[in-house]
Image (tube, one colour):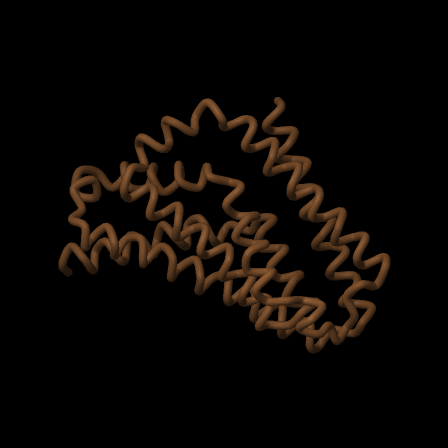
Length: 210
């Protein structure tokens, strides 16, 4: 296997490694797909995958320098991330209470492009992701550090495609569930998801302040 294919596979492993652990963004993507259908959920997942792609690119180009520059801001970034997650959860719960998204939500109520940029922003607010990709590259040793521009591009492409495939699977599961859940179970699933996001946000905030 040539260096380009090796870098592509390693990028894929790194992308799945950051995307698969269930977190707040994953729950929000599933919730979006349940409420708005697969196309909108897919766009939400694509926004999150784009952020992973951007940070994989940054890590492959100047990860060590960026990671060092981010270190003094680690706590404020975690605090901001926790507050944003908590705010999103509260907004989601208020929306359920007000019935703002019905069982047959239209594209006008769930604009796919808006969801794309919303999830891009949500994921970008956690730039510590670049630290993860940098650690992965460093962990691979001198071979990874000596990647050619082509191999770097393959690594970034692999990470982006892996993240997109996982986020799309989450959106598909949410869309499938949304079509088969009754209105009551749809509400229960949405409320449960938002409460879990709220707990995760509180955990991030407490962890940052501890």
